[in-house]
Length: 444
Image (cartoon, rainbow, N blue to C red; front, side, top):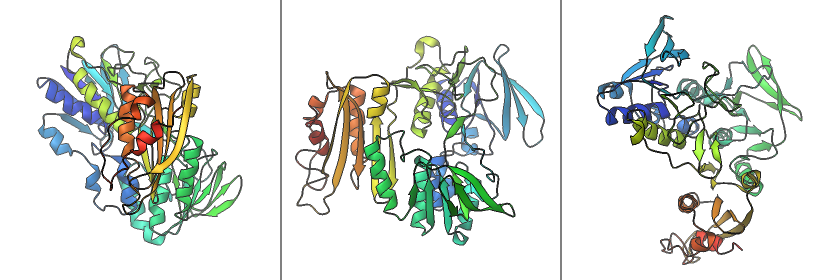
C-alpha cells in the first residue's frame, strides 16, 4: 500500500507516524514544502518573548527520526496538483525546480494554512512580520534590542500573545483590532472585555473598531501605521489577522467551505475516495456545531492520529473521531482565560434554546494565601439543563478548571449534575464547594 501525505507539520506527521505503526508493510511518504517537519508554531510568541531560547524545543520530531522509523521524507518539495482519477501527485523539487510525480493508493492532505496578508499599502516592507515560521521570528528576536515601537494588527490568539510577550520586553505596543472586541471568536463580550483589561494592565494600548489603512514607509521599511482613526510609530509591524487554508492547488473536485477548507467526515475522509484531510486545511467534526473550521494544533494532532489508523486499514476497521469542542486558552499578563464548547452567541446562531449564568467566585479557601476571584460563565439548555459551553477568566488556577468543564460538556451532563460532582478539595486548591460546583448551582 502506497500512502502519500502532503504536509509534514502537525496533522501530517501524526498520520505518518501512526500509519507506519498500524501497517508496517505500507510505504509511507511525506511531501513537505519546508526543510523541516513536526514544527509547533504555537511556541513562537513565547520564543520571541524570551520564555525559552532554543528553537529546537518547538520541533517534536527531526527528519532523521522519521526516516529511521521507515518513513520516506521529500523535504523542500511542493505539491502543485493532484489527479484523483489516476491517483497521482505532481510536485516541484524546490532545490532543483524539477517536476516529479508519485502515485498513491491512499492520500492524506495536511497542507495547513497561510497567514492572511491584507492588501495594505506598504505591507511588503522588510520589517513587517507574521508569527508562523521559525526563521523570520528568529531574525525578529535578534533585532529586538534595537526595537521600541511595535504595532500588532489583529486581536486574536497570536496578536494578543505576541503583544503580551513583547510588553514583557519593555516595548511600546499598539494592538489594533478591526472588530469591537478582542478574542471575539472563542469568547462572549463580557470575557473579551476582561481580556482587554488584562492586556491594558501590561501597558499595551488597545485600539478596537479600528482598521489599518496604510503602512508609512521609508527606504523599504515601515516607520508608522496609519489607521482610519490615527497614526502610530512603528519600528516593527506584526500582522496576525487570521489564516486561509492552503488548498488553492486542488481542483474543484473536493467539497470545500467558502474559505477553501476541505470538508471531511468523522473518519477524516473527503468527498474523494481514498483521500483524507485534516489540520488547518480542513474542517473538523464538532460535537455540538457540526462540521466547522477550527485551525487549532490540538485538533490537528488528534485528527492526525485517528486518520493515521484509518488510512492504513480497511473501512470496517476505521475509527470515528468523537468530535471537538473548540477548547482553547490564552494568557494575558497576570490573567488567563479559557473557552470550551459553545459561547452564548454561537448557541444562538445555532438556534439553540439556551440560558446562561455568569458568576465570580473564589479559587480556594479564604484563609489560604493569595485568594483570587474566578469568573465563570455556563451556557446550557433552557429546558434540559444540558451543558453546552463554558468560559473562565482569572489568575492562577483558572484555565485548568476548563478541563473539568470540557469533560462535562463532552459527556452531555446537566448543570444540576455538575453542581454536585465530587471534585478534589484541599484549601490551597479549592473551597469545599469547588468553583465549578458554585457556578453550576446558580443555573436556573
